[in-house]
Length: 465
Image (cartoon, rainbow, N blue to C red; front, side, top):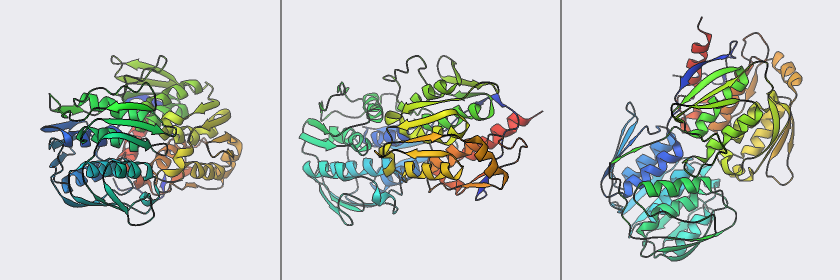
């Protein structure tokens, strides 16, 4: 569907109906599984895979490295001819756009090749995203990596000589993807990697990587949250059933989990696995499911259904939406969802643990502060750069909306587009008229290409007589 730009968001004049919503496959799992499948000892088919800009970038890069990848978007499957840890191409130029997972994972894969020269670059924003911790570690492991622009950033040229193994130190404080990249290529090293971590680290996505490695035949990594651990070399990646199912994306689900808070009513998120009791996610791949607890704190009712493979969400129009204090360190991709709907909450909303999001697709903290102030909200950007506090002012928001459409800047960041679209579903003016519009709505193609199609269908289903 071609989208207007800017795109007005139609408010819900009726509570969202209890209908099933299936969000796309996880970007984080799909791109990790693509790399692990490429390293396998034979063919692997990924089912329920995400088809988005980021995953297409990853698949195309693997093809350029000589690894056959066949995509069937209609069936949501990706077939990968695993090369048993080998990188067939000895020369390749790879373009990673603004895909952080692809950038870090492919850098590690190319460096782990026994030989070859590989050039990797992305869009201008990718050239600002942190790479230094991974580059330094791979250099210490034997790769010759030249930063042809600013040191520690893309573009880079890699002259590969394999990984020597042994003691290795990595600073993945700016992005846990750097440690995940190292863990996935570690079996290709000449001997065990004795890993030492420096700096703080967000563990959930590293745990996702560790669990996926185990699913693909590697020994379990035991870290116990400690800064020193061993990763075995020489173990073949293999998937006995040759098929790996990709879970629905927990971050993408956050928008529809929050929709009943904004519109009242109920939705069912199909296929989403969340432990609602204590939220012990050790056996869950996606740490962003922790956002469900935040929504429960606010007032949303969540109930597991279908033997824990779906979540029913509900909220009544006469219920209270409570603000509060939350630390998003371990599930920071979802903080924008909360911040965007904070004008509707009662009391202040304090969000911490998000300093690292200043170096993602855009400076997400600064961008969120600017857009919320545009909506007339009181926003305190914390002096330590680690978060923000929102003091809601619904009367001022209505006043501004009554004077004309409020246009949200997305900074070419998909999460701004989707988060504020959910806020726009609230019937603020009580007349069903759009009051908020989203600039560059097509930026959602990065992780959720049909987001606005799904939202439109939910609106239609909810307004049927």
